[in-house]
Image (cartoon, rainbow, N blue to C red; front, side):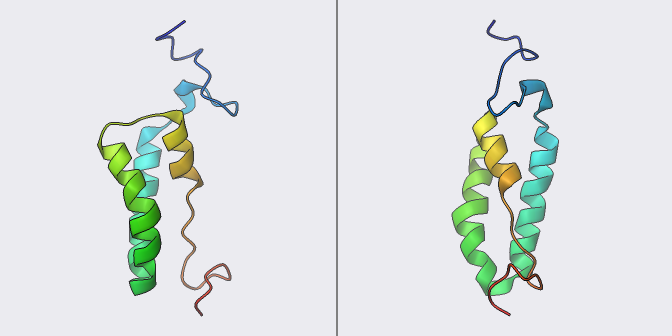
Length: 86
C-alpha cells in the first residue's frame, strides 16, 4: 500500500525503514575528506562521483537507488594497495 514505509520494497532486499540517511550523509562527508587527502588526484573522484551524489542528496532526492550508490561508493586511502599512484 502506498505510504506504508515498513512494507515498501526498495529492491535488493532493502526495506525503506532500513535506509539510514544520516549514515549516508556521514559517508558522503567522509568521502569528501578522503578525496581531499588524496590531493590533486582526489579531484577526479570528487568531481565525477562524490559531488554529483551530494547534489542529488542535497536537492531532496532520497531514493533507494541513491542510497545504494552512496553507500557503495568507496574512495581508497592513498596508502592502500587499491590506490594506483604510489
